[in-house]
Image 1 (cartoon, helix red, strand yellow):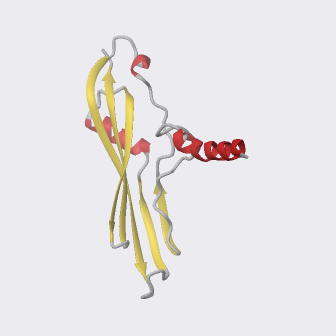
Image 2 (cartoon, helix red, strand yellow):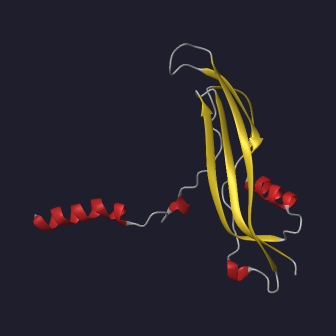
Image 3 (cartoon, rainbow, N blue to C red):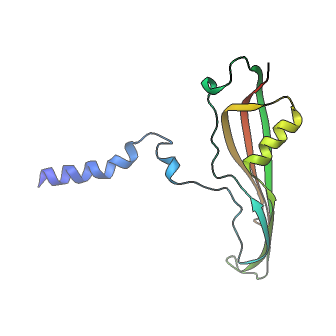
Length: 147
């Protein structure tokens, strides 16, 4: 009986013992603005995954450009049509919050960039009373140019 209880205790504690970030690849969060109850318009793009180079993948002779940053955002508007807290609303969303747009911004600011590595991403959310929402994808990376 004690063996069974010890095994149950260990089984219950096992998920908490894994490292932070371990297994995250199984649960992708696409980063799209949530849809409201009556969606009138919805045209957004958001990040899902991005495969990036590491420092060792950088071409030989490439010129280091340092850290670069880019961002892309989605915007949403949700207008309540009842006084109830859980009431229905009419909503819409628009914007390109994708990695592609954030990287395009980096290349626009620094046209000499031919590649990036050591990529880090963040999501920034702004919500005003749940009526206006802004979801931004922020990309920070190290860039390189041709020699």
